[in-house]
Image (cartoon, rainbow, N blue to C red; front, side, top):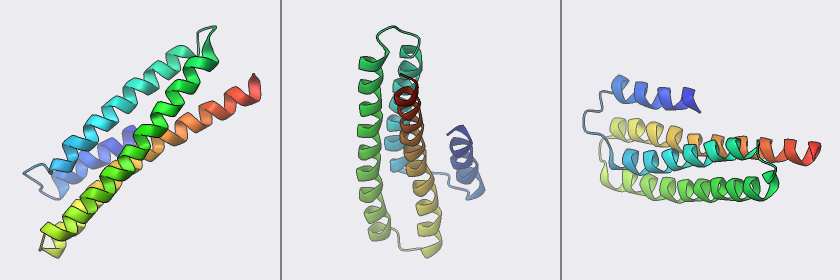
Length: 121
């Protein structure tokens, strides 16, 4: 997750994207919320009430990933509709793809945790 975040920052510089795209703010909000929920998920693993809390956090992470998918679709449509320069489309789409992939990684991590809990509980 952190490696992908670094890639996004690197790409913004590499592609010389001076004006940060609006989708960046929207994804950053979701990613921040995902990170907060993930931290709570990990903290709840130490609790004796693990299952109830963990399941709630896992569901929240899945919901955020769904929001990320919806956001991604909306921004891809907007990128192709509003940007006329094909090179700029490629740059923006690449950054947008990586942001959506971050959301996917949060969900995959929560799935791994869920699988481990099922196996060892």
